[in-house]
Image (cartoon, rainbow, N blue to C red):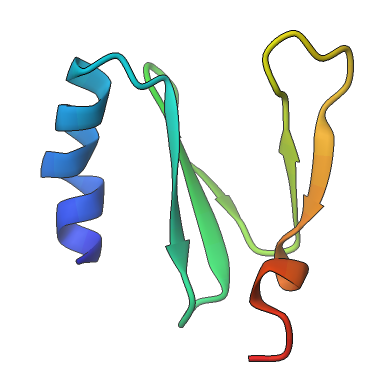
Length: 69
């Protein structure tokens, strides 16, 4: 559930050393990016994602994730 993803799971993942995870919400057609030590980022249009070691962020079209749902 959303409550579990944003509560207990967040703490469990960050305590285990996960630096970032995404919560996909098909109803809101959004992606929430959770990063340790940062405010959550909510994306509905495009999502810049900076892969480790990359010189540039990858720009992900959130609408493409959901297709024509």
